Structures are given as structure tokens and as C-alpha cells.
Length: 467
Image 1 (cartoon, helix red, strand yellow):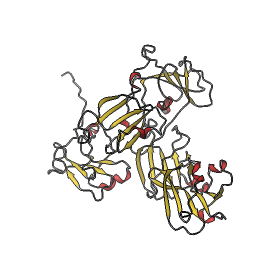
Image 2 (image 1 turned 90 degrees about the vertical axis):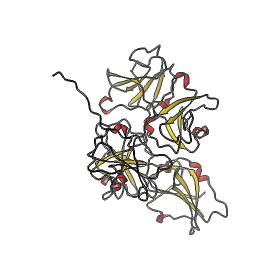
Image 3 (image 1 turned 90 degrees about the horizontal axis):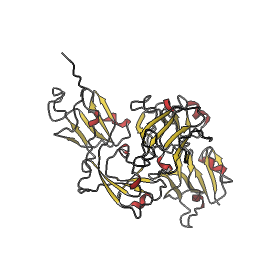
Image 4 (image 1 turned 60 degrees about the horizontal axis):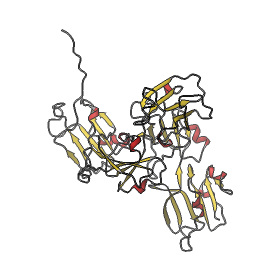
């Protein structure tokens, strides 16, 4: 058994006896031939990693595992003597998970937690999961990372800046990077009952789902969160294509119930909005790639697509829940998918004998839009983590809903320029216009000027009046 050291406090000390807390790796004192180091803000997800023993030929190397699919680190096995190199293992054995605080800034937190590298600062009105596992890549500079939370406080944070931010320890001079929505899952307990409209529930949780026991829906599909203005109300939903004979009116078979609220009002929402996990893969026809996920449905999407996960809001009806559903994305990969079938699949848990149902085309990809006096200043897109960002001359009058164009895989590394044919012609008299779609890696990108513009003029309301 090799000694195990954790930098700063770590919950693994409560699970594995003998784990020693240190302030930094320079504090390691060990008599074993090799020793383990757990970095700060790391949660071990696979304790069997500590059973690893290198061969006699590999114990001269430092061994390092992954904390997500793209980054090594978090857990290291190091020789007591000087390492002769690094051997990387592709297994993900841990995650980075930072504390969440509700302060206005993290100064006091970092003073009290000297080993912490980052901390989340969140608006206290958000409902958040017990842990957030998003973390910046190993070699990313010290940004303040700003996020929205899907379906929450959008009235309070209507622009690019969200209400939850990840601060690095050296945050005072850090720039802010805007990411859009944070990928979090909020789950409340689910009770299946023959009386889903009886809301007197005894539980320690703040909310509980009451579901008609005849309904065919998985717990993983119930992830909706109420707005801050409606958190003491019952929220009732229908499920598409199910129990319509039993619930023909506004009342549906699923309710999210606040616990401890006397005589709550009821909000009838109609059909529930469900988001399934999305995996971008090189071969979306290999359904075994979803088998490690226990959710009822998982999206497999060709990794060459440019896609906004928000457009994947399809819910199978009762009679189609055992089928695999296939979709196209409009105007994308038509050379790879020239026929009916596209490269987007919604795959059920038990897919082995499932029939395939072809559904057609999904429209819409959304990238952040910056309205600016200087759309040719590409550096403005660096504050956004999106694959592309629109830079639009703020004097244009455009329909923002028409900003759905996306490049093909053959020119997705270029900057794309568009000119509105009937606007700002004195400012942009030639082919080049004041609208740019700028990729993440723009510094060495070529500029492609498009002859036609897919963006529409602003739409105005029309009022007819009597003379």
C-alpha cells in the first residue's frame, strides 16, 4: 500500500483510512516506494484507482489519470525518487468540484480556504445541484467564467452575463469569459401514486414530483425547475401522447409540489419540457456509446454537426418510447446524409431490438450575438466560449431569429462575412458587409465573403387604423 496525500481538505479522508492532508506537494514525507497525491478541489469517483500497482519497469515514472475526457490530472502516483517521465492513463477516475458560495465576491472565501484554486459565486435565488463538476481546462488562463442556469432567473440576467460565476484564486485582474448555460441537472424525488393530485406530502425535500402510477416516464426525464416567482406553487404538466383519456382537461398526470406550503396555487403548464443528455460522437449509429448512461433516453449526434442542444427538445409519445428516433439538422452535412436519415439519434435505454423511426429535419443553431460599432474587431469574441460568435454592426436592423446560419464542415475554420443588401449601403458599398460569424480559433482564419445574405430584415408589428 502506497501512502496517500491530499492537498487541502478532501472528503476521501472519511472513506480511506490513513489519508494525510498536506498544504502542498513539497510537504510530502513518505517511506513507501511511491505515493499518491490528490490535488485540491478533486472528488474521487473511482476508488479502485488506488489498487493500481505499476510493473517493475514502470515504477520509475509518474502516473497520472484523467479528471474528464480531455484533461489529465487530479490524481497522481509518483515515485519517491526523481521521476523519469510521465505515463498517462486514459481512465477518468475523478472530477473537479468547487465549493459554491452566495457572497458578492470570493475574497473572504480564499482567505479561509488557502488551498482552493477556484470557487463558484452564485445568486442565492438559483436552485443548484449538490455539486457542480464543470471546470476549466488545465491550460486555460485565469478567467472569471460566467454562466446562466437553464430556466432560472432569466428575467434577472437577460444578457450575456449570468448569475453564477467561477472565480480563480487570482481573480482581481482576470477577464470574464461568457459561456451561456451551465450544464447542470436538478433532480427532485419522484413519488408514483394513484392520487397524484393529493399534494399533502411528508418529506425532508423542498420539492417532490407526484406522478400518476400509470404514466410511462423515467425519473431522469423530470428535471424541470420553477421560476423564482412561482416556487410556492404546484406546477402541473401533461406528457405528450399519454393518459389523455384520463386527463382530458388542463390538469395533467405530473405535478411538482412544494413541500410545507399550505393550500398552494396551481399552475397548469401543458406539455412538459424535457432535455435528454447529448453525446457528440464520430459514429452516431453505434448505439453502444449510450450504454454507460442510465437515463431512459440519450441523444447521439454526429460530432461534425454544429448544434445548439436547446433544439433537441423532442419527447417520444407512449407508443414510440421503445423506438430509436432519427433526425436531420437543416443545411448541415448534406453530403454525408443525402437521404432521409440524418446524423442525430434519440436512443432509448433498451435499444437492442428497437425499431427505427425517421422524423425529418430539426431547424436552428444559435450562437451568441454581439452588436458593436466595430464588428471587424474579432477580439470581442474571446469573451465567449461558444464555437462561433456573431459580430453585428449595431446600426443594422435585423431579425435576430434569422441568425441560424452555420458553416459547412469544409469552411468551418473560416471567418464568414455577410452584407445586408438594403441597409448601410453607404457604409458597406462593396461586397463586404458588417456581419461576421467568427470561429473560436480566429487568429489565423481566412475571411470568406458571401455573395448572398441568409439574415432577414427586422420585422415590425403592423397596426391598421381608421382614417
